[in-house]
Length: 181
Image (cartoon, rainbow, N blue to C red):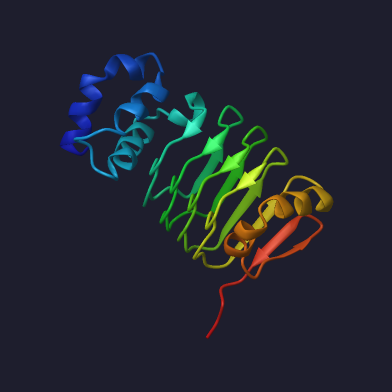
């Protein structure tokens, strides 16, 4: 475990024991913590069989940035997936986002290059720019109707052009293939 993370955990053990991860992640938004400190903390917690996602309403900035996670289930208590939350997690193979999540932040899953399957909930109201940008071959399954998906797209037309570029939607399923030269 990273020494700075270990010290942070020791200093904030009461928050961890009381599952106050909202406060814990808010604390690391201020100096002296580095940009990817959040990801290192998350990795340490997950390796200790503590899943902070079960206690968060928002997955914070760089939550699992550049992680080695392969399968992620984002629980229904989470309402928002933050900016770059899982960006550059190149081992990611599947992400199931449960009903209740309403917002996927900018670059949330950007550059997760592996063939990845996403399940998006009908509860989504906003998918921000580049949320799935610069990905390899991915499939995105939407748990609503084709009409509902089109409504979501229409609300975020500019974003759609950058987020799901070259995607097609057939009965709620989007497939995106990496552009070839």
